[in-house]
Image (cartoon, rainbow, N blue to C red; front, side):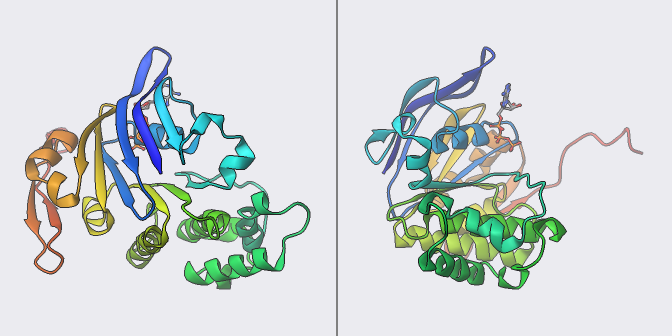
Length: 266
Ligand SMILES: Nc1ncnc2c1ncn2[C@@H]1O[C@H](COP(=O)(O)OP(=O)(O)OP(=O)(O)O)[C@@H](O)[C@H]1O
C-alpha cells in the first residue's frame, strides 16, 4: 500500500505541491488529472522517490519511501517518465532488458529473457527488437519504454507502477492498449498511478481520480463522483458538457468552444 499524508514539495521558496493526502492499495488504478503546471509530475516524482517531500509522510508497504535505497526501490516500483532521453544507438531489445538490470548481476537469466519476450509481445514491439532505438518513431519509442518499465516489475507482487502521460504521442489503438495493460496489471495486484490529460480516458480506466489544482488536491473520487461540468471548470477553466455513457455508465466529457480572444489573428 502507498500512503501519502500531507505531502508538500517546496523549491526556491515556491510550493509546487501542498498538503496532498491519499492512499492506494494493490488492485487499484488511480489517475491524476490537472492543468499544465498543477504539480502532477512533481507529485509523481515524490511518489517514485526521486524527490523527497519537504513535509509530510509518504510510505510504501509501511516504510518511508525516502528510507528505501535506490536498488530496493527499483525492485518495488517502476516509473515511466514523460521524456526518456537515450543518446546511444542501443538495440530495442537492449533497452527493454535494461528494465531487468535490478534483477541480475552479470548476465540475464532465462527468466529475464522470457519476461522481456512476453512483455514485448504484449506491447506490440517484438518486430522492433533488432532495430536501433534511435531509428524508431516517437510512438514506437514510447511503447519500448513502456516495455522497459513493465519488465522491471513484471514478477514483483504488489508493485507500484507510476506513469507520467503514458499515452502522449500514441495512436488511438495504442492509447487504449497501454491503459488496458495498466488496468489489467492493477487487477493482478499492482498499484497503478497514471497522469493523463484525456478526461474521457481517465473516466474509462480509472478506479479513482485525483484532481490537482495549484499543487493542491482539489477532488478525489470515482469518475462519476468527480467528473462534473462544475468540477472540470474549476480545475481546467473550460466549459464542457458531461454526459453519462449509456454503455459504460461512466461520465463522458465534451468540451465547448474555447472562449479565448482570437481577435489578434483576424
Ligand atoms: N525545479 C523547479 N523550480 C521551480 N519551479 C518548478 C520546478 N519544477 C517544476 N516547477 C514548476 O512547478 C509547477 C508544477 O510543475 P509540474 O511539472 O509538476 O506540473 P504538471 O502538473 O506535471 O504540468 P504539465 O501538465 O505541464 O506536465 C510548474 O509551474 C513548474 O514550472
